[in-house]
Length: 103
Image: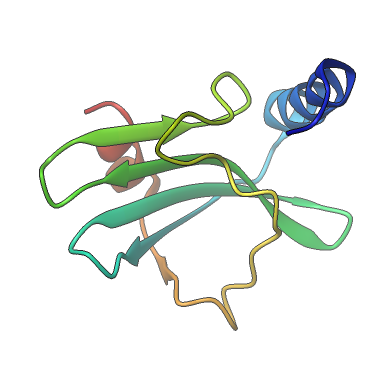
């Protein structure tokens, strides 16, 4: 687990990306255990950085991760850039992401 100073740097990085983003991409991913992941990502330095993740579990629970809530006992916001050409992601409309995020 990173120290508090490092966590503050991480939060500041993601928050700044979120506040200045003009282009957002939305994806979903079918989980192996029947759940579904929804992702909001923005370009930064040639990569797509995940800003928000919402997991809808097969038990109809929602787990949300962003710079405001990086992690909990269930999981956390990925710190890895995504590549839709390689990662098993399906582009989805912003409205579908928002419905999942706001559940």
